[in-house]
Length: 152
Image (cartoon, rainbow, N blue to C red; front, side, top):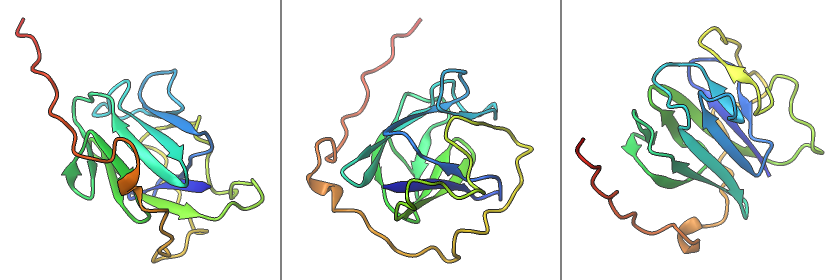
């Protein structure tokens, strides 16, 4: 399964090449985003049965899908994913013999605010390529609110 996060600011796209991708500012993250609004361990994206599953890791500034703050969500093609104030369009596509397009960057590269290259290989508007219905997947139901934080 090929999945790419395309920055809405025109930066370099991020090819999600691993089954589990940790996103944040920390050096151990697979995708490092240097913006101060991004938490050290912001979220994780997992490829599962042709679907991208996202889980926020308790980030300070939140994770949104199509404008709605989420703790867990299935990411569908053309969804807008916002990590704090950094926005991406989700792109699904067929595997291209295992080769990422030359314009894409691997998911272990650090992005900073100076990356401003367009991604001409992705058609505009993006084609609708929907994964299987995620509603029957574990964890796809309502999410309980987090427990209250201790007052120190």
